[in-house]
Image 1 (tube, helix red, strand yellow):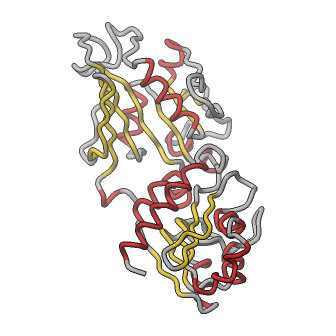
Image 2: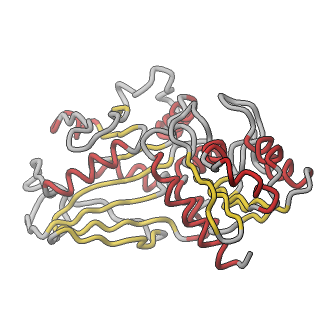
Length: 324
């Protein structure tokens, strides 16, 4: 199979894997596609945590009349097949039992109980394994899961809205820069992440509910960063508070955190280097005075720009050498 075709089928894995975005957490999103002689004979994705993995669903979708093709088939999987017993049996064992000819893996699983073991199990069984097809795209799909396992902290998204002249409020009073549509996007983001945090001043001034109202999904855990009333009782206020917070969130298996302000809180995270993504919504509004918006750090690069009828959302990520 050519490299071009390997990428083609891996893109299909990524496409169907994303269907599990709302329900797989804390498990990663995974897609699997089974191909024989240029024809997809089975495919599936991890639908919900605790239920069958992508490989299980892909094999289950193969029609009875195509089952004899397994020995000549390739299975594409966006994430390394698991090798341990969790809520379901190891997918690596299932693949071996099906007798497929070749396995193509998008990226290695960063979870300590897998992390290369699934690939080794397949190779030990005599199966040809190719690893790293569309690796960056596969890692990006599960960036929260990867960051949590590799850095022992949540994936952190800093997010704020500002005027075109660089203020996050008007005359130091709350002001809505978002449109109805971009507010919907914000609530969609909340539904896709585990926790959301604001600072003490924002909580007192705005008392935001931080709930999902304009989208469907589970409300994120609501956190207020307050040195006098910490999020969790075990935080030691004599120690740096953010590092303590990261430890507590990791222990609670919180894989992703949105920080929504205000300016001082954002600067704390930026100064500590605790961020993986920054989303800035800039409205075509001039307010002249107010609270100055945080400065995007020097090690940030633009990953995307979206324009929604004048409101521009710019997404930043760390430079490539600092992402892992």
